[in-house]
Length: 222
Image (cartoon, rainbow, N blue to C red; front, top):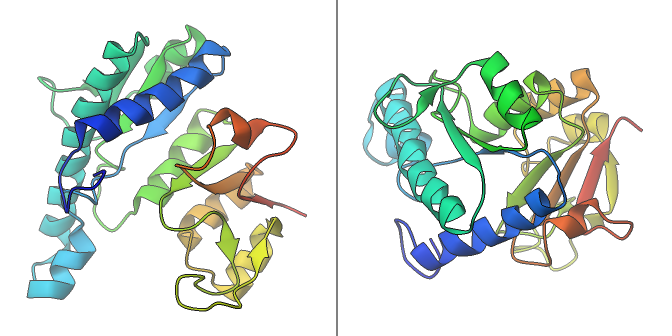
């Protein structure tokens, strides 16, 4: 969104694309799960005016296609090789998600954008990301946020004495029910032993999340 109250900032899209390109330049295989919350978030619509959760989530999933189109074009403009795959059938906009084809694209060094969520309501972007991470055998799941710079024991925006974790286990997150990550996503990554790094997107580069002195919080088995 950039500084906009909602919708898409082209400047922000270009900034996201530039950060992703840094990873591709290092020959790192990249899958990106796109959210749609800046355009439409289903659970908020249900809470605000009683819209049924299923159609609200369907609108949210369609919003991820719109965000995906913008990022797809920004990545192409940045000189990246990129493919967009959707869990929802929308053949004039994106390829239908197929696991084998996605793996071939990744092996060829293409960035793969995953849009359309899981294709089903009641699943968050976190859960979608964890699902795709498991499917493509990801080495790590990077959760970029603009709200905080890692995982805290309480909301640092409200509590001045909030403690930041540099590392934390999956089990601790589940036991403490820390809200920065969807607990279904945590459980899925724990089962597949895929570490998660939570970090602020605007602090440093994406490469820094994989460096010897990484930013954010790392979630692991132990």
